[in-house]
Length: 130
Image (tube, rainbow, N blue to C red):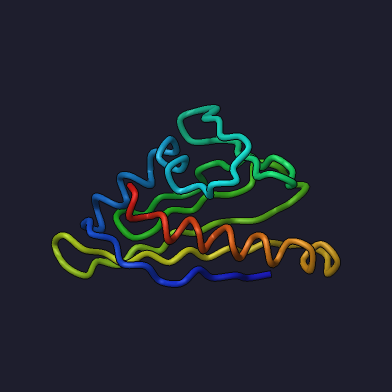
């Protein structure tokens, strides 16, 4: 299952946005309002929970400065990645798009598609809060 957020323009350079997204603590600022839990559990990982959804542990998997950051599920039960694709527009402006790729059975995919789509759209929209 692949989902994409809308591309969002952020008033920061690509490198500045990359640096902010490289620090997992900053993901708390991107979370939707209905967040029930956010906890940094290491330099490169955090747990978050949304109301009515199970808690998810994300771990930094790959960084390609200043264009790409890959977060992945720390558990093999729900294998997925969340890729931040950063594109430089000018010295103080960049665009970011989030790509979600998950391997779910059809029933699970049907259940999570709506909430995850809304979630990554919120993450992208909140990029300007960083």
